[in-house]
Length: 117
Image (cartoon, rainbow, N blue to C red; front, side, top):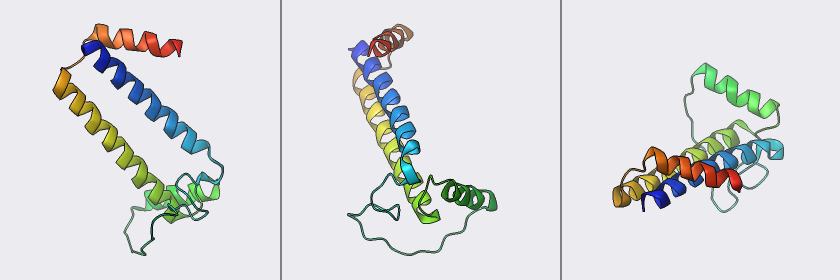
């Protein structure tokens, strides 16, 4: 069973890395939905937030580089990515609680299987 858990953990980590890479490559950085960088199924609410100057600079650079449609879209995408990361971490935690920690041998097996795919 530990092998199965190791495989699932390794596969989830690989898929997460692929998803982040894919989202980064999407033209205009719009990974969540409409042209404004928001999920079209949700109503947007205007709020005021405070950002450190380095974070605001980074967000504006993402917009200028075409990787985000707007500063708001960049922030929305970052929040969505964090939520997905936390969801995956919770799933991995549940698998470990149910089946135990995978061994180094389990991880080695999972890596070898993933290299073949």
